[in-house]
Image (tube, rainbow, N blue to C red; front, side, top):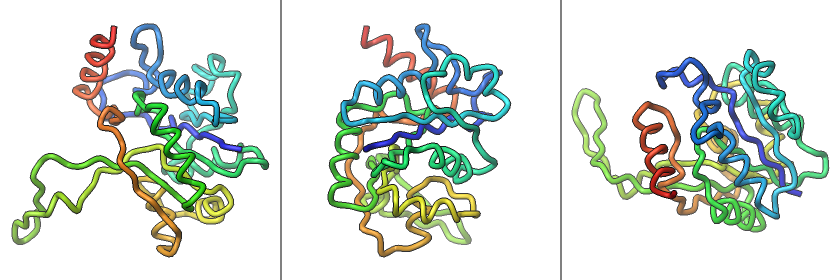
Length: 217
C-alpha cells in the first residue's frame, strides 16, 4: 500500500498573496488541486493525506473532506510527523510532496514507487544550469556538475522513515535530509527529475506556472 502526504502547512510569506500560495485559485482550481488530482489518477496510490496550516483548516477543510486532513507544525518535520500519524497501518511506502509543486507528472510518481522496491528512500533531482559560488572570506567557484537541486516527492519505506521522523526534533529543509542526517547507511537513491516540477515560491514562479497552463490550452 502506498500513501501520499501532501505538505501544505506553510504560509508562503515570500509570495505577495493574502492567503497561502497553495490555496490560490488559477483556472478555477487551487494550486494544491493540481498535485492532488495527479496523485489521485495514479493507480498505485492508495490514500492521500493533506497537511494544512492550522488557522486555515476551517476556511478550506470543507473542500477536502474526501481526504485525511491534519494541521502543520512549526517546522517541516513536525508537519510530516502529523501526516505520517494519519497513514494507514497497512501502508508500506510513503511519498511526501510539496503542495507548491503543482506540475508533478505520472512518471515521477511511478518512478518513485517503483524504485522503493530496491531502495529505502528515493528523491528526484534536477541539474543546476547557473554558475555557483561560495561566499566566504574568499570567493570560491563550485563544481555545478556535483551539485543538484532536490525536488519532491521524497519517498520512503514507511517503517524505516517513521522510526526516524517521529523522533526528529530538529528542523530540516526536506525529509530526505532528516533521514540522512540520522543515519547515512540507509540505501538511498537520487534519480533524474523534471524541471517542470518546480516549487512556486515567488511571484515570478507563479507567473511562470500561469504561462505554462496557458500554453497547454
